[in-house]
Image 1: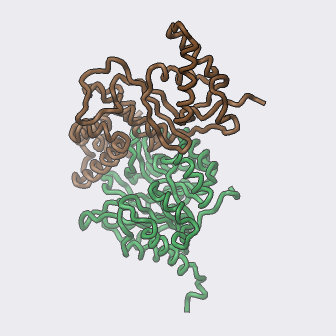
Image 2: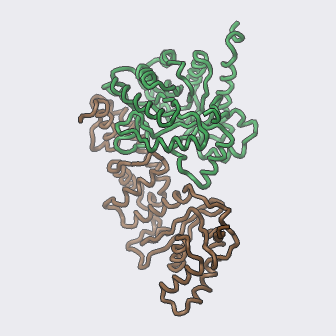
Image 3: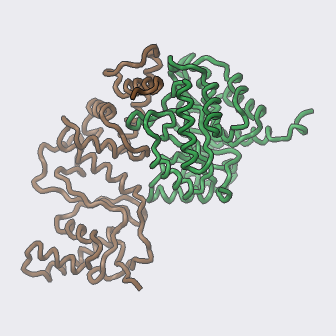
Length: 287
Length: 251
């Protein structure tokens, strides 16, 4: 896939309402920090007309990363291989090298169109890993899986989230899409130390990251809405991750209450700024 | 074959999400936390459905609408992984749903058509079209994304204050198409024009042949009148963007 543009730097999750602004401001300094955009194939596969032309324009002007929603890697139904072949054609058509999915499930015989938690059991590790391997086979590329946010811990769990993620990555031999906000969300929802979690991440597998805002519902409950600005403790985790593991492509997700693009760009700019600060070679940076 | 424990848990988890009142949550799971899922998942689904069917939602009223979507969520196994096909999944279920007003399926179908026509991945090769070609002597090329529809209810005029009590005496013919600017347009057609568009959709008869066929179907005593009338009709359809031009004969 040498001819596919590489994903690097700072990115922005594409929402349809942002497209006219992106087109109008293209080439201006206000959006200069956007190195790539991310889309969900589930929202764009088979779409023509005006929306289809918009996607072609975007793919002509930006490298695109694909972040799936419906693969249901942890779901009880057979892996939807017809869908995966559609994804493959889509990735090829828009020259997309990176495809990531969630460590979650969204099917129970039919689609529920939402991300649900996989119980962290030994059997689930084997099951999910096999499906990731099959996915990589069909897509003819490595994929990265994302640590998902969740609200209910399965009482049947045999291990903690970090152990589960590491076991799946190892067993599937795939990459990690590290969602910094999700680490924070889950640390509050399940009372663990996010820094300790970060230190346990197999850094050699990180290829991509997300950062986002969320809604604080209660002292011990965060809802992962992507509906607000990124909070300082989450930025601090991103900085910590950069200093621990080096810089990786990082994308801002904003799905609800989307401010005008110039406002949103402040957070993309900040990602780029941090990436600049942390990519200074250590020999120069250290006294 | 028995499922692994984690899958039995997952299925119990989703049964409860789909039907919180009818299926118990898994053992030892906090009711408060479980409610986060039952609310979020349903609300997200409802928004995806409602985005396509604003009139149906308004006509039914929020209570009946919410009950209807809940029933859909409980009963229907959606087959499409694509989010934009959620409305289509709803429509598939609605077609056979009992205890809904008789006009509801037609109305929902009509609302869905706008989305389907707007996003259909079809286009016309401009090389095969002569925009000013003779529509009487050549085969017409129609707008690539188009649906010719016939409803038993005046779906295009429904509102909370105008709910039909009975089907129309004659069905209404509506044409929904995407014009050259990619905007979706709606036109009400009389039965003869609808028939003409239908014949032209077959894509092999010239305008004259299509009109002759209509004259035969109507058993019209003077086919030339139909052709004169039809010439204007064709010009009008071209002007509105329903016909994009005449098919160029192969070189």
